[in-house]
Length: 155
Image (cartoon, rainbow, N blue to C red; front, side):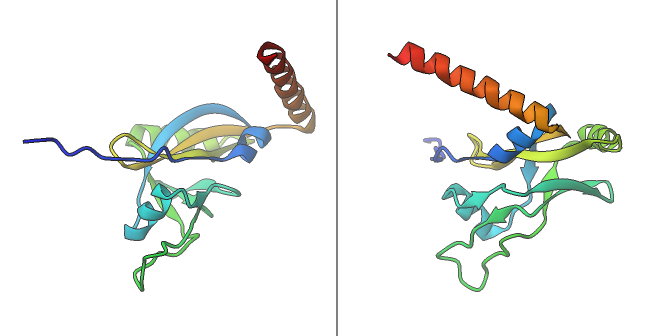
């Protein structure tokens, strides 16, 4: 009996603005509770993490404002584009994250949405601290320096 191979495209949706605005302290990989047509849109790469954030409600972690485009072949069963979606982590991780976010200046930011090797949608979230303006300038200088080095080696 041959095993069924799951064919997945390399779907990797990043929140580039989050890496610029926040300093990541710790990262976690969470599953997402999705409806039928949402996973099809994500596999097609039709999702965005712009202006998304995570929050706790009744001991559960939710992601708010994550955009998943309507599925073109979906009919009346199509999903709502910007609905709140529940994130799946184990109890210990949830307790640690909730305790860490109670400290001032810390938040939970979605960093990356992808499809894993089993074909499941996963969301990398990060416990983050907001950067000041001078931190952002320093990050830009470091990025430019890396690009200069890369260009020098390419010649």
